[in-house]
Amino acid sequence: MNYPDRVPFIKPDQLQENELQLVLNQYLAADQRREWVPAYHFSMVHQQSRMIVGSINLRIGNTDRLVLYRGHIGYGVKPEFRGHRYAARSVRLLLPLAAKHQLNPLWITCDPDNFASRRTCELVGAELVEIIDVPPDEEMYQHGVRQKCRYKLETT
Image 1 (cartoon, one colour):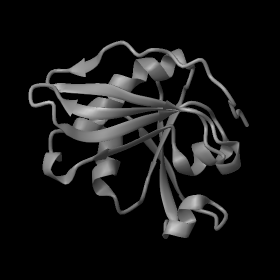
Image 2 (cartoon, rainbow, N blue to C red; image 1 turned 135 degrees about the horizontal axis):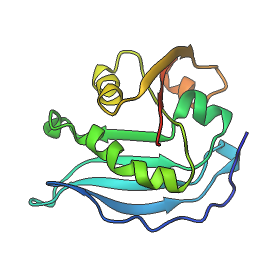
Image 3 (cartoon, one colour; image 1 turned 90 degrees about the vertical axis):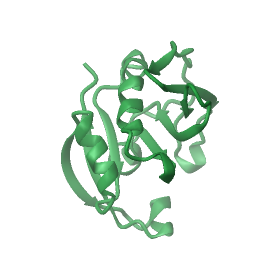
Image 4 (cartoon, one colour; image 1 turned 180 degrees about the horizontal axis):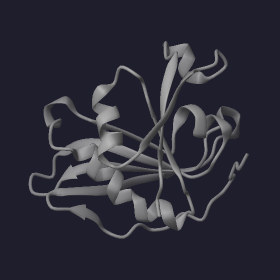
């Protein structure tokens, strides 16, 4: 298990594709009690309107829980902005930053019935490895999550 207590955060280059821009909100330190690794948190911003259309984060580390259930990348797009592939485009924008942290492969997880997230994984070229049961001692289990799809994405 690779549990980085501290990582040297890297100031990201400009992360933009056409009208979509990722704006760094914060660097989040590790929380060993909750088994959270350091992370970058970004807003997905529509460049022209400056509206926040969603969010995405990149978690730095390779703990068992991260690789199996939580994933290196988490994202969400506001319902009124769905259909523009903002999540897939944002994942692609984060690949160079993930590579600088030597995260290869990246793991992305989602609920089996979240077909939009599953489609996002497919669009970025991630491979479905398996659908696994979430153990009762995992935090998300307490919120009703019982299974996760595990997608593997090569960064190089």
